[in-house]
Length: 217
Image (cartoon, rainbow, N blue to C red):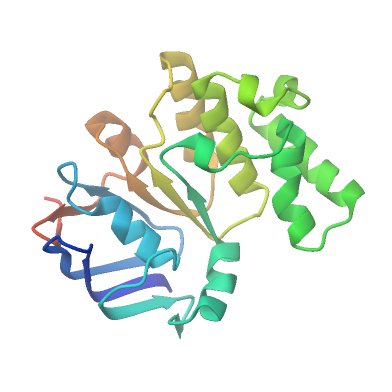
């Protein structure tokens, strides 16, 4: 079953040439794909188009069997695709770790008690319970990265989108992240410059160059 399809996506930033020029991608249930390519190739741009944060000049986004065009169309998409941004500070905004993780479930209509139970469950699974009541902006870069993943997992998404998830991680936290991701059932779309990390999480996928996605050998 196809969860996400991008068909002939084109996109250009003002005063620049085409960043994406007919990019196509398909992600199936439980599938794990990497996107690699040089800096500035448009990898993050492509991911943002997939969840409606940017709109393509042309092409189609099909998510969970439906064409997605309007902001209303993408509301459901962003509930079902968990996007871990390249910079954790773009995603963490509550005073404490527990509040950041509870924010998503509360917005989905969970009670405070239900949301806090999700917080404790997610942190326990990730062996991060010691961070529960920490002030978010006092965390290290690696701790923020793992907490950002926890905020996404709290939403129980069907797809995880990970944009350079090993940035700012030391060896210990990268190993922990790897263990967590390997244990998850979700489909994954991964951007990473680390060939070793890609090989362990999503060895198949695409290379983005000159605006076009081509399958990795």
